[in-house]
Image (cartoon, rainbow, N blue to C red; front, side):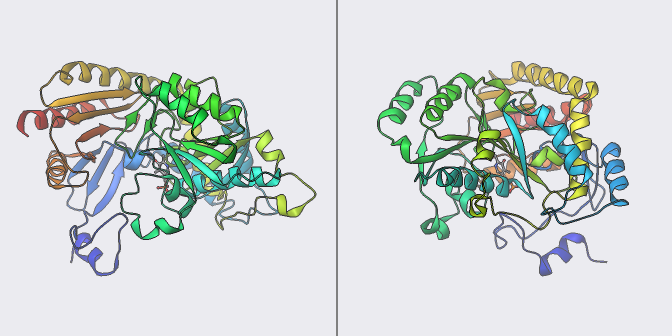
Amino acid sequence: MKSLSERDEKHLWHPLTQHKLHPKMLGISKAKGAVLYDENGKEYIDGISSWYTAMYGHCNEAIIDRVYQQMQRLDQVVFSGFTHEPAVALSEALIPLLPANQEKLFFSDNGSTSTEIGIKMALQYHHNKGKKRSVLLAFEDGFHGDTFGAMSVSSLSVYNGPFEDYFIEVKRIPVPTDDNIGSLLHDLENNIDLGFIAGFIYEPLVQGAAAMKMHRAEHLEKILKLIKSHGVLAIADEVMTGFGKTGKHFASDYMEVKPDIICMSKALTAGMLPMAVTSCTQEVYDAFYSDDIAKGLFHGHTYTANPLACSAALAGIELLKSEAIQKNISRIIQWHQEFDAEIKDHPKVAATRQIGVIYALDLNIAMERYGNVRDKLFKHFMDSGVFLRPLGNTIYILAPYITTKEQMQKIYSSIKEVLANF
Ligand SMILES: *Cc1c(COP(=O)(O)O)cnc(C)c1O
């Protein structure tokens, strides 16, 4: 029989892939806990939780059980005009977990749609109030997804050339540092007309696709305070950072100033099913609440608030709040700190950074984002049974909370081999 990898080539077109340069896909046949198994039985520790989704481990029994129970009761139903227990229960579980000013949840299917909806909420919020604000504000090096609004506000969209003529208008500001925060605030106040800005979309504290680039909460907080004082809505894209990864439930929890809108996906459903939520304040919601039908938010996806996905999310939130998972998060934070102390002064390490269970190191080696050396690095990790996806010269770890000490040691060892041999 042909392998999965061979059968794949005939009809499948993969995301973010130039097939002529990278024709071969690795067949994965199962996953359990922190481990992926390929079709030949080789094991890989999932060092990035399958793009930050499977934080409680793959094929987690508690989540399977919850979804299985729900499957037998109600699988799918229209969410316009109808509601159901998993969605209501999820709202009751998620709202208390979110920053205190969040009151309403709008469902969709993936991270890009959650930011797309956040952007539409911000634009229509001002429109409904009779104000013309048609520009978005965003960070340089941000990533918010691959649909049009999301692409427009992302500046890491290095391969978005064919679409750029159709983007919405965006003003960009640099990510704050100790050095630039003064001039950044000055520029925002004096050189950008904030009266035309509908919303500021940002990845709070960690820019995932920018190779886990981090900035300080106190700097971000100053930016938020300033833009909010000019009526600009703050849209926190917590698609990557949400659900415990930064050591708090949400990265926004590190700040007193709260976002008006929060975008969530990825770990929301614990890696079991695709779903997203865009939450907002009562004030945002009230701008849409009217006798005028046209002031409503006329956005909707067929699978909005799918009951199975809501059940997976409910089980995920219970796990996140459990003592066991909170303990796991604390010990991973500690292990990363110990590993960091061990390698940060190595001559091949240019810089390291950590927040919560997210750990990143920059190699002192010149490399392209998806170039040759990067491919060699990737191969080294896979050969040693560790799935990590280096970005340029950055290696980062975002392993599931349930990763054992032994498994984490294996990830660290394979990184130390890179430092010794590359
Ligand atoms: C992954 C990601 C997205 C896009 O989510 P998709 O589900 O891939 O569409 C948006 N924003 C951030 C910060 C992300 O990490």
